[in-house]
Image (cartoon, rainbow, N blue to C red):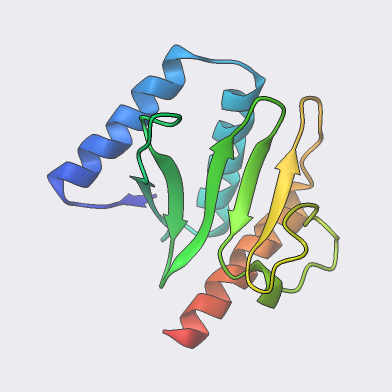
Amino acid sequence: MKRSSSPAKESATASFDASVQERVDWRVEMLARLRTLIEQADPEVVEEAKWKKPSQPEGVPVWSHNGIICTGETYKNAVKLTFAQGAAVDDPAGLFNSSLEGNVRRAIDFHEGDKVNEEALQALIRAAVALNSSRA
């Protein structure tokens, strides 16, 4: 995985990783699994931690390739992958199950015990990268 090369961004990613390791539970494990699948789907993906706020002092992981692919956030009962241009991405497996009313974004909420359809998720990642690349 390519990570941003600036020292500030590397520090942000390291801070996120350290914070995540401090509160390991099913959500952290799920986000780590999703991160691996994203990296496998697009070896050129860039991950950064953005949008630090009191509720997420480590920031939100954001994966990009010619634009934002998706973000990953943990909530009390879910891990949410939000695809920046999800409404424009084909989802033949029907993974999108959240933020369906919007005109641009789409999301997938993963709950404790959910099985990840790895093949379909990686196809969505590749489709999002292709869409970003066609618009670049």
